[in-house]
Each structure stands twice: as structure tokens, then as C-alpha cells.
Image (spheres, rainbow, N blue to C red):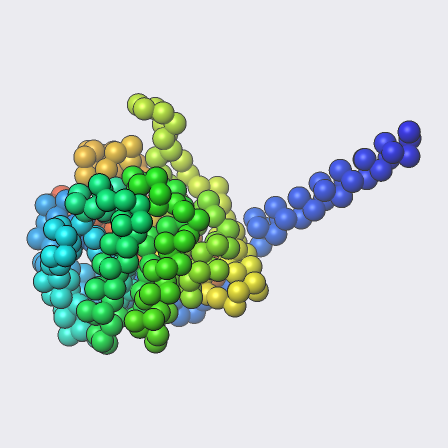
Amino acid sequence: MKRIFKMIIYIFLVIFIIAISLLAWFFVGKAPAQENILWGVDFSQMQTEALKLNWKETYTAILDDLGVRNIKLHIQWDFVEGEKDKYYFDDIDWQIKEAEKRNAKIIFVVGMKTGRWPECHEPKWAKDLSIEEQKQEVLKYVEKTVLRYKDSKTILAWQAENEPLFKFGICPDWYYDGGELLKQEVALIKKIDPIRQVYVSDSGEQSMWINSAKIGDKVGTTMYRKVWAHIFDGFGFYFDSYLQPIFYYRKAQIIKWLFGKEVICVELQAEPWADRLFYDVSLKEQEKSMDLAQFKSNINFAKKTGLKEFYLWGAEWWYWMKETQDRPEIWNEAKILFK
């Protein structure tokens, strides 16, 4: 009996040591410094219009005043195909051409879940179709889009969906199907455009990126530092992430070792995250999760992760702050990154 007891104690001790070692590996240490970090921004016409800004003016200011030359472009399916088989690409054509004029590079997000609330942007006409019909319509939309823009020199890469394996937002129940639709999208994009890589993005804080790395050519992670933690209706609190820069670096190392693939940050928090859509709360409330100090802190944090590329999430808000609130501090601070 004593022997069995000693064996149990020994097993638990080994497990404890392994667990502590893993925690230390993920939370202790420093990532190597990157000398030449690529900085870009995410841009959504839909978000700009929600802020009641002139979206063309905002986009041009991002390119010319900020000097941005790397953009991740979020395009909504319901905007492009508001009516079945009737595609509206005019505004996207304009964005692509303006980027081409300045030799900017674009990561083009295609699919149904492409960022900004409610995350999945399924047209109304598609909602009553069968599940299989809905999937085929998504693929048809992806095909139309990639065929239209694959010859543009400004397209750096494609991103299939936005965090498609992470359950967040309002999406059909069938959407989280284990990545089957995502795999079809990636295969379709690569068939149409075999030259460019196809990125798959995932949660930086709530995923190990393994499944995304199995499907995409490159993994895009998110990085959020201060957000509203929703407990239940009417109750929550602002949460400061406890994760350290080494956490992201170690996970990126795992992806490199297992798959030989790179991890970049395609969504670095640079705007508020409140209990509601931030443009529905006061400026004072917005600044509880994002102000100049938090912006600088997030940039410094990013520099310590060892990752080489970052796309900042919130450029539309910086412009809104500058133009409508007479608060240009974050806009001006961001200029430093794009010199």
C-alpha cells in the first residue's frame, strides 16, 4: 500500500513539475527584438460610415497623412452582394486603385465572417437558403472577388474569413463546422491565384493557432490588452490582459517548429472595447479602454513579442477622434510608426 501511495505522489509531483515548467516557458523570458517591424492598419468602409465619416476622405488620409503603405482591407459580403448575383465592386475598385497609385500593399479579407460587428455579414437573401446552398453562395462570392482582383499588383495576400475557428459574433449555427468551409475557401483561392499566400487568422489570447496553421499559409493573430469582460446583461468590467509578450512569441515558435509557418499580428488593439459598440458610448467611456497612454503601451508591448508584422485595429477611430473630437493625439502618435 505504501508503495502505491509513493507511486501516486511521484506521478503527481512529475505532473506538477511539468505544469510549472510549461507555465514558466510561456510566461517567463524575453523575445528577441525585431529591428525592422512592418506596421500597417486594418480598414473597413463600413466602420468608417458607422462613425459618420466620409470614408474616401478617411482612406486617403490614412494613405497620405499617416503614410500607411500596408492595409488589411475588410470587405463585407452583404455590402458587395446585397441582391443575389448582383455584385457591387465600385467602392472596392476605388480603394484598390488608390492603394496602387501609392504602391501600397493590401491583405484582402474575403468570405462571410470578415470583421466588424456582427462579424458574419451574410446577405438577407441568403439566410433562408439551405445550409449547403449558403455555403455554395459564399464560395461563389469568394470566387468572384478573387478573380476580379488577383491581377492587381497591390494585393499582397488573401485572408480567408476573420477568426473563422473562434466562436465570436453573430453567425449561423452551421458556420463553425470544424473548418470545412474554410478549407474549401482556401483551396478555391489557391486554385484561382496560386501565387499569393492565404492567411488564416485566430484569437491571440484564446487559441494555440494549431488548427489555423494546418489550413493557412500564414497565421494572423489578434492582440488585445484592455477590453470589456461581459459577465451577463448589464454587468461586466474592464479587463487588463495578464499575458506577457513572451506568450505570443512562444506560441509563434511552436507554429514555426510544427508547420514551418510564420505568425503575424493582423489585429493589434488600437481602439476602445466597451460594453457596447464604442460609438454608442461617451468619449469618457471610450477612453477607459483606449487613450494615448494605452495606445503607446500596446505599441511597446507589441514590439516585445518578437513578431515582425502588426496591423493596427482602429485607424478609422483615430481619424474620428481627430476630425470630430479635436483629439488628434493618437493620430499624430501613429504617424511615428509609418515614417
